[in-house]
Length: 110
Image 1 (cartoon, rainbow, N blue to C red):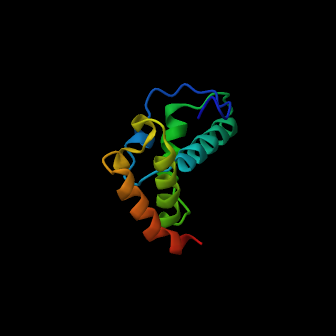
Image 2: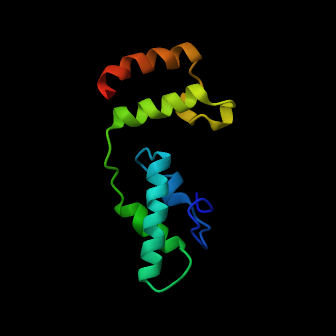
């Protein structure tokens, strides 16, 4: 995502993101990285540092509907062409289990 958003960085410790106590979606991680770039620029440097990332990650609170996020992730898992692209928590689910869970969530999403 750093390449996608053209975020120059010196990050060597991704722990604040990949060891987070809260489940972070791809959009959450992207938001953290964009905010980290903003913090770095305010601090007067061009590249995001480990400290910038750690600060933003510690302050981050996802503003979302967890059921909507789960639904979107399940749709992505259903469409994935390789297991490596599927979030770890869905890798052991069969296609039928994913379809059933989507049906349960669908009424709450619309």
